[in-house]
Structures are given as structure tokens and as C-alpha cells.
Picture (cartoon, rainbow, N blue to C red):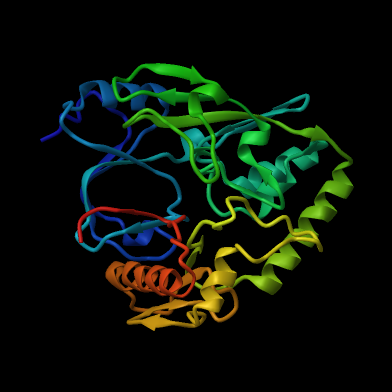
Length: 305
């Protein structure tokens, strides 16, 4: 049992996680903690027994929670962690601030963080996964992050500490990222908003944005994001090798590889986490059998089967 007397946030036992992920699947977490603010999070982590695992969760946009649930305390940041402040060309955002909101607020202030506009999820996840598109990555604009360690200590980490790589970074085990500072380049607000609208229009034409998905399922074997430019090379894009393996539109239970964009795994209704992960593994096997390429998951999968 966890002592709740010293905390101000909301602690819920056996919390079903399916409604908190974009794919709407998954079993319960042992506990879900929603801290009131940074001090509340620090106090909670300090008093939490060391043997209890901690899993920081954003808005669940890039996550499959397995059907057996998660033997951990899931920490989900909310309103106390979504402030966005702009000072010159530096934008500081709480980890729960949505990427799209940060991009728009920055553009209002004449700061170019437009690549974030079409990335699903929150700033905490963008830093953790070094999210990017159109040839830009979070690492390119990252300056620092505030992180609460598993011990409850609040520290500031720089880019060297996080060791950014394609769709990866290194955060200390059990640490919770609470805010990040990003440095954009100056731009005309009207032009920045126009560029973001064009990006949204293009995304809606090429991706199943109205379906229940978690964004790109697999990392590009080429090791970089699509640039969105006319000279972009597609040979080693995940969608291309999936197409070549004949897996566009493949189904398993309620799970399907999208007909519109074959690197998008969607819940067509009633899918289980096992359906989704199982279909993903079928795709990986077929791609390997046909091309010798081993696709790496971009969607995080956690918990017990």
C-alpha cells in the first residue's frame, strides 16, 4: 500500500489505461498518479518504495499497453505541467504541453518550431523520442530539460546528458521529464502559421488522421525521417518496405495496417493489444523474409501480455 497522506495529486489503484492511449487498448496499471505540480511529484517519488517501478506516460499517442496491464506506478502529468512561455527565441514548455500547442504559441511570437505542429503527443514525449519530421528533430532545437529523478531530486539536463539519436534519447531510469526549453529561429508569424497549415493539409491527404492509430509504427530503416521534399528518397522508408512485402492493409482481429499509409497501425474497432502487437510482428517477419530488413518498432510496447 502507498501512503497518500503527503501528496496533493490524485492516486488511483488498478487504473484501466486503455482510455488513456490513442489506440484505446491495454489493461490496468497497479497505480496511476497525477501530481499537482513539481513539488508534489518530488514528494511522491521520495516516499515511493524503491522496489516499485515507475512509468512516465504522456498522452499515450505512441504507446501500446499490453492487455495484462502494467506492474508499476504510471505517472501522468496534467494541467500543472502544460504552461508555455516564450522569451526571445527560447520557448519553455511543460512536459504535458501538446506539441501542436507549442508550435502555435511559438509561431504567434515569431519563433519557428513549425515541425512540431503535426507531431502527435506532448513535449515530454517529443524529447524522450527525439521526435521529428520534415528533416527537423527535437534535438536540433533542444537546449535543456528539467527532470525529477527517481529519488525525487530535481535536475537540469543538457543535450549531452540525453545523447539524442534517431527516435531515441537516454533518460535516467524512472526519471520524469517535467519541462523543456527549445530554441527556434526567428520568423514572420503569418508565414509560420501558413506553413503549418500547409503541413496539416499534406498530412491529412497522406495519413489516416481520422483513424484510431499511434502515428508511425516502425522507424525508417534509413535512420531518418521523411523530409517532405520532392527529392525525398523512399527506398528505405518503413512504408515502402511494408508495401514491398505485400502488407499494406493486412489485418489481424481488429487491427489493420492502414490502406492509406502502410506504416500506420490502426484499431478498426474492438482490437486488443495482442491483435495490434501481433500484426506488427507479422509485418516485421514478412519484411525480413522478403528484404532481409529488420524493422524496429517506433511505438513503445509495455506491460504484461
